[in-house]
Amino acid sequence: MKRFTKATRILSVAALTVMGAGLAACGGSGGGGDGGSGSATTAKGPIKIWYSNNEFEVKWGKAMVESWNSAHPDQKIDAQEIPAGKSSEEVIGAAITAGNAPCLVFNTAPVAVPQFQKQGGLVALDEFPDGLQYIKDRTGDLADQYKSADGKMYQLPWKSNPVVLFYNKDIFAKAGLDPENPKLGTHQELLDTARTLVSSGAASNAMWPSPASDFFQSWFDFYSFYAANSDGTPLVKDGKATFDSEEGKQVATMFETLYKENLASKEVYQGDSFAEGKAAMSMAGPWAIAAYKDKVNWGAVPVPAAAAKADTSTFSDAKNVAMYSACENQGTAWEVMKFATSQEQDGKLLTDTGQMPMRKDLPTVYADYFAKNPAYTQFAAQAARTVEVPNVSNSVEVWQTFRTAYAKAVIFGNESIDTSFKAAADKINQLVAQK
Image (tube, rainbow, N blue to C red):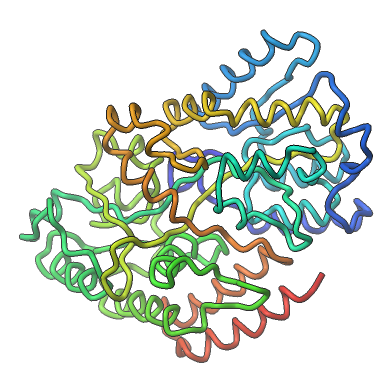
């Protein structure tokens, strides 16, 4: 999946539904395929990998493969971009069903991992003697968010795009606001700023988060703000929905106000409303620095909470690396995973893409890079305070249930937040309990 425009962040609900429909055909109900066979996890030889099809990651991927292949002529990587499809998740799911998935995919969406695992399509990285220790040493405590319900790791946390609040400095100045010191530290400040932006005529919309019903849209409005307001609480924790709470309702009420006062549009915008000057603020990660270059005179602040906080959490917008059970030479695949996520390769990924490797002490490990590229510094600091989508059963349906309830109450005002959130939480609890 491409990363560097809003449109290309999108996952296809229909595609993931189709992917899930292939579960029965695979005959697998557990996660690891033949990952525990012993011989597969030690076998060495050529492997196939897929990586993302955006130009920045293609550049990194080709160089990484060339570096590995020159040093391992008997264990060469055959690499390609993820084949075209409605979404990379659909393509991967179909490959699992067909039994011809590559050994590694450097673009595995965490929300799809429970479904891939249920298909029997993934190898538990715990099967490798140094698997868990390597992940822990590289990623730190953030790695715990990526464990599956059975306690195993089926994905290696790789890179994140921590979401922050971007704002257009020129529009702020036009509205009489200080573009170098915007008042965006709390929900109330954001609302007051939004009112000034629109009432002054500087912007027709203060924000324009997508009102579409796709399950993933909540990651870029509610969820990022909920992470900030709840000190990093995921949507589901310990098998129970968490958002039907004071912290969740504070976020919902703030967005409800934006829509009620026509500070945010209820229409779907075909394009990038922020890049095109149709909205004064936008939620995005460091990918946006390259996307908005020479288009927007932007600034960025951490996602605000209801009350001012020194440091807030946000949504990670991560992509990870997973090993697929059709792989015969899993010993080589594991060594490639480690090579591709080494400190050297992570540094090259950071340089080539501007995305944040999921590595503890990121700002100090790559201090030289951030000194030369100060625009990325705040994202490096924010990367240590990110929240992932919960790794739970029926993960896509969980998010679709939430999105439907949120849209009904918050965006379109057809039901109260209390009623809608309570019903959604009850349904999500049932979904998570299912195996």
